[in-house]
Length: 121
Image (cartoon, rainbow, N blue to C red; front, top):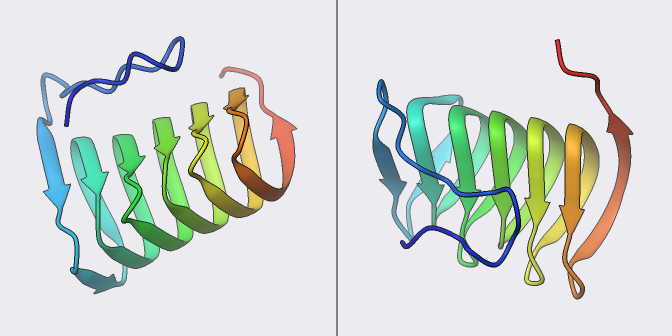
């Protein structure tokens, strides 16, 4: 996947400690997933995902929680998002709660969520 240039301020990149991980389309996981660096989700996760940066691609979905500095959703998500920068792309379908310092919602995104701004710590 190339880096996103269509959303200001969000450029997922592999961290020095982590790297870039892919959870492929058709894959299913029930439980917690902790990944250093960037994780790109093309399959389905039912549980908690923690990483430096999380991208749910259009074919991806998560039911549970996301914990990351940067979160980008192009697919489906239900649950709670905890992130510094959260971007919901035009193809996103999101329901639940969003806790972030910065939230960007593109036109066309389907969002049924409560949102709260959290201060940087």
